Length: 298
Image (cartoon, rainbow, N blue to C red; front, side):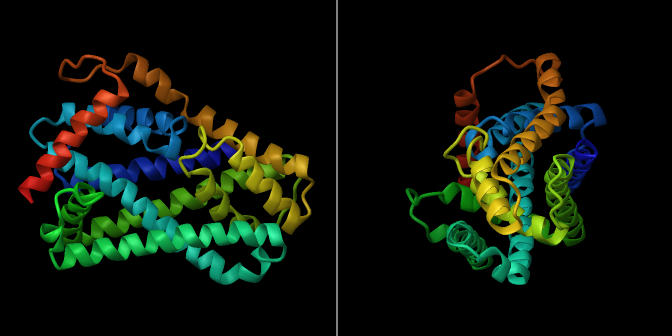
């Protein structure tokens, strides 16, 4: 069941990306679309912060669409952005409904405060980008302002996807499905290990685990994921600590198995245009050059 649940995650996320590419008038064949998506999913599991796959996916997408490079990059940026907005919406709702439950012990309260700090920073960043975009303030930002080029990218994406609001709402809905199906993957792993935690309580814990394990301070969230679940599930739901740790490890294994096809695809993938294999750092440099070009054009 957990594998099926994560299959829903991949289908929803792939559909979201398809919708966002369509807005940019980028039409890839289904095999190429799925290949790039699977490659991105695979590499996102192994690099800090879960964004390495985005870099690789962006790089190959740029090679597939040399006449629409800016649109390709903005689609990847907005794909990540709309996922963040959906997670913030789910997290805010669950915390509002289950705050008393989540803050029962000192340890769980501390983790909840970590989440609230990250959530607050995310909301502030989102509001800042809305204000900067709405009033075209990015032109007033100094050239060396931290994240200036990213802000301009997001602003450009806002203007385009705001005009295609129906597609944006569909992408947002797909993001909600993807996040909730991820929670369900962990819940199925918990049930398989005999931890009969009520669905609402388990889902209330998941935004804390997802947020903290995604911080770029560990390799694929290993260790952080298990520690958070150990504290939260044991402290709030009475799950034995060893079982809580196993829930985290088993869930990661399931996700890894579901993402492994991306490794096979990457090994055999041949872009429609001849492309030499390059290191991740070189991919980042090429994407940074394009980002700078977008900022100058804006």
